[in-house]
Image (tube, rainbow, N blue to C red; front, side):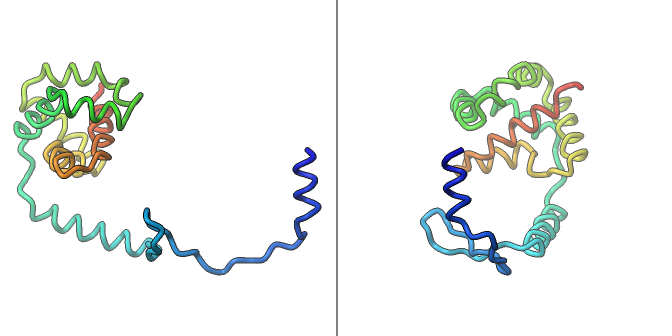
Length: 151
């Protein structure tokens, strides 16, 4: 309480309004422009346009790709480090996925992608991002597995 009283005593009672957004700082401290909702909507529209011209999802390929990731010790170790407790909570779903046929698993993946409007959760897309060094793609694996789980 003493600290709070000292802060209150030294603070002015009037707050200055701020009518601007501060510039965002990048990892190295450099300034970057603030992204607006219009920027995000524009990027989303471009992504959706590219997706519309992409080949249709091949359930067998998507199922085989997910099973390959779940059978790869390096990918599992990596995602275990990145997604930690969330990764562990998906172990039984991962076991069930490994036991399914590629086509059956791919159809279930297709439903999740459709239901969530999330083409970035396609295992072929996740695998590409992991291969490109994007560790955060492990969160996509976990999200996909959690949504494959019977509810």
